[in-house]
Length: 483
Image (cartoon, rainbow, N blue to C red; front, top):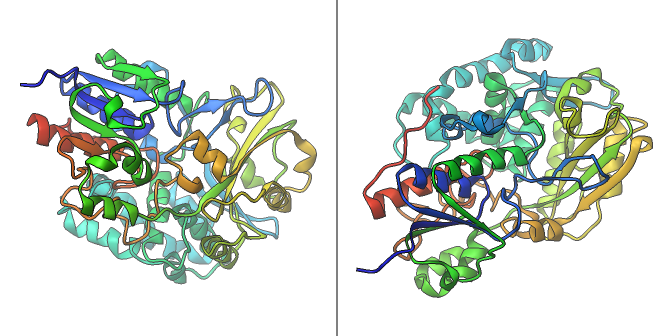
C-alpha cells in the first residue's frame, strides 16, 4: 500500500477552500492547506490600498451569506475574534429625485415604505422568509431531491423567473428599482431566466439576519476560519503556487479551490478527454471594475436613508439597470453603469482614521476589459451624492486583469467563478452525477465554479469535502445548521 503524507490536500484558501479543509479536519483526517499568496483568504482580504490607516476590502465586503451560511453557523468563529456589525439599513436604492427605497431587517417596514406595492412585496417575501429555514440547505446545495419539496417549489416558481418578469408584479419605480438592484448581483442580463433567484435570496437574508460586515474587514472572516482549522490540527503553507499535481505531497484526496481554467492547467493531462472538453466549454461571465476611495468625510448622499446603509445600489430605475447589464454583457461599456457601493467605515471605526472614511464600489464590464471606468463610476456616485468628488483624498483601482492577477479564480474579472445562468446553475463546472468529482479518482473541485456558486458562504467547499469523505474515506461531513 502507498504511503501518504496526508489524508487530504486542499489547494486555495478562499472561503470554499477553507470550508473544505475544516470539514475534512473535523472528520479526524490529516489535512494540508496550500495557498499561493503569502496571505490567506482568497476573496477575503483587507489591506491599506489607498493611504495609511485606511483599510479596504480587496474583494468581498458585505456578507449576508457568510452570516447566514448553514455551514459557517456551525463553527465557533466568534471565539477567534470574528465580530459582525449590522447596519440599520441593509441596502438603500436612491433615485434621481432625491428619494430612496430601502431594505430593512423588518420585512413589514420595508413593505410599508413601498406604498402601493406594500401588499405585493409582502405576498412575495413573507412565504420565502418564513420557509427559509426549511429550504436554505437545499437552495445552497447541488441539485437533489429537496427535503421540503412544496416549500422549495414555491421558492423555485419565483426564482426561475427573469427579474424583468418578476418585477411586473410591482407598480412603483421604487419596488421595481429595488428588486432590479438585488437581481443585478447575478451579474447577467436581467432578462435571463433565474436572475430573480439571487435577488430573492439576498432579500430573504436581509429580513432574517440583515447584511452584516465584519469588524476590521473581510480578512477577519478568513483569519477566524484559518485559526479554527489550525486549532483542529490542520497544517497551512503559504507562498506555494500550485501549477501541477506533481508539486503536491502524496494524499488520498486532493481538493482544488480553482475554476476550470486552472483545473485544466494543473491537472489537464490526467483528466479524461470528455471531461476536458466539458471544462473548456465552461463559460465565464462579466468582469468587474473596482474603485476604493479614502475620503475626508462621509459620502454626501441626497437621500438621508443612504447614510444608514452599509450597501447602496446606484442604478436609478429598473429600465436603466437592465440596460446597463445588457450593454456590459454584450461586450460594451455602459455610460451609466449599475454601481454596487459599500460604506463600511460609517459603522466600523476601525476602517479609517478618526473623522475620515472609506468607500468601496464596482460596476460590471465585459469579461477581460481593460477600460478605465473610474471617471464613469465617480460620476454615477456624484449623481446621487453631489460633492462626493470633493471628499476624495485617495483612490485605488482594479481593472479585470488586475483583479485576476490578485486572484486567478476571477478569470477575466468574473468574481462569481463562472456565469451563473440557467445552464450553469447546477451543472457547473460540468454535467456529472456529482459536480465536485473530476474524472480523476481522488481529485475534487471545491470552488465557486461548483454549486451553489459565488458568494462567501463556504457551501461549495462543504459539499465537495462531503463528497470526498464519502468516496474516499467512507465518512460524512458534520450536519449543517438548522435555523
